[in-house]
Image (cartoon, rainbow, N blue to C red):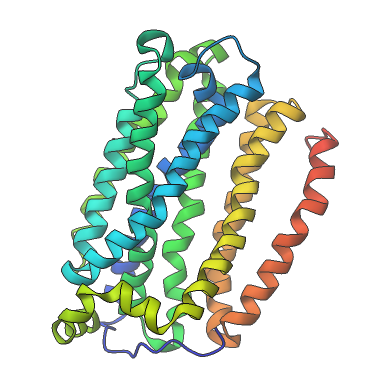
Length: 342
């Protein structure tokens, strides 16, 4: 992590084209995390009441909805492996377009699902199937989007440029939170629970079409095309080769992402449940708080990418890890205070 990456500048076609690549990659991550985060929020606010048997307490219903949420995370590594292998063989662009369409289709269909009262246990069953496909596609999106930018970026500023697709994650979260804020503010609780939440899922069709169009305007990097021509056999057995040659590096990277993701979803998903069930906070207040958190996250990511080009990846990661690890010591007392200003 202290060394600069080993890519050279062969993929760099100038800043104008690089900005187009960044826009295309970021558009996809915004769209896909709009949909992925939308599911997590709906799992807390809606799904337990709509897709599962009535009559239990609120916490049991939310926990049942979170089981389906976990299915998406189980599918993500599988999607990353499959899309990574296919991306090495057929190109980043094609697979990124496919992942975008898969996520958009499954999210739209979630908004069309009948309730438990209409089709019984088929409702949670179909929800699990759609969630698995959604998670599978998201697993192929994240790494591919960052690789596409990294392969087009100049060496001296690769951390900064490659950070922008990651900034699309809080960007998508902000979009989803804003849509839910409008819906929860404009509709009575009964209307939002009955049909209003579905509007947010149906809107995914619009944002997917926009993201797909933007992605048609870029191509794979020359450095990737050259490497693919020279290493067709490696592309076929790429995963096996990586695990055989770099097991420690792979496990280290997985561990780093495990810690980071655990903290991230504590903030953006568990905190919603905690505030709703334990603190009994108003839904609109919760969403405003999340919107502010996503805005800060969006601003910090490119700054961290820029700093990583100057001082190295390791120091930036360590500072972020320490800050994230300290979060719970301050956040939960503030949430328990029930003070909206805090």
